[in-house]
Amino acid sequence: MQEFFKLRALLSGLLLVVLLTSGCQSGSERYHLSGSVTYKGTPVPRGLIVFTPVEQGGLQGSPAFAKISNGRFDTSVDGEGHFGGVQDLMISGFDGENVTEDAPMGGVLFATMTVRKTLPASTSQMDLVLP
Image (tube, one colour):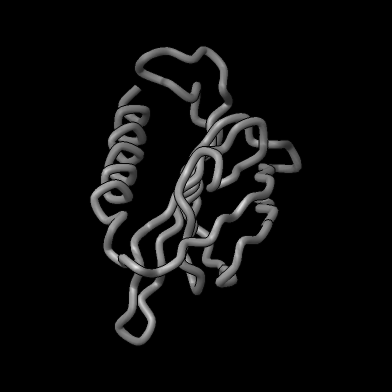
């Protein structure tokens, strides 16, 4: 149960960072990303991806995010686009079962994973395969 509260606090904090910094690069175009997320070969039922730009040459954009639903994500539908470039993707996955007010995405499917990807400065697709 304590693990759930830690995860809930982490997700709440990540969402707060995204919301508070969403205007940091005014005038810069955001690009949308969509695709699939699988864990051990199976679509992730519910989850969240936070895209955090990796600072390069003193430039860093604000984070982007997308919700995962039935193994799919799309920043243009339920999230906010990215600025392109090198990004750390923090991916949290849930089973979507026994959803309650305290566990709105169900039980934890895996510990939050971070992967580094270079995203194009254009709208694109990407499939994320998690081990």
